[in-house]
Length: 101
Image (tube, rainbow, N blue to C red; front, side, top):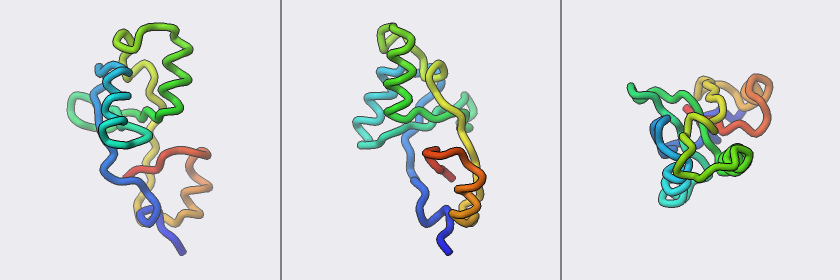
C-alpha cells in the first residue's frame, strides 16, 4: 500500500507571513512551484498559499499585490505522518490539499 511519503511534495519554498503576495508569486515562479509555505518568525509552517488560492483570495481583496501580505491570503496547513497510508490521508485531509511533511 502506498504511503504519504511516496506521493508528498518536498522542498516547498517558504516565505514569511509579512511577505507580499507579489513576493509569494515571485518565489513560486523562481522555484517553478505551484505553492509556498508561510512560516512564522520561528520558521514554523503556519499556512500555505497555492497559485490558485493566491489568485482567488488576492483578486477578491481588489488591492495592489505589494499591499497584500501572505498571511492575508494563506490557507490552512494540515499535518499527517509521512508513513501514514494514502488511504488514511484521503479520509483525514480535505480534498485537494497540498500534502507536506
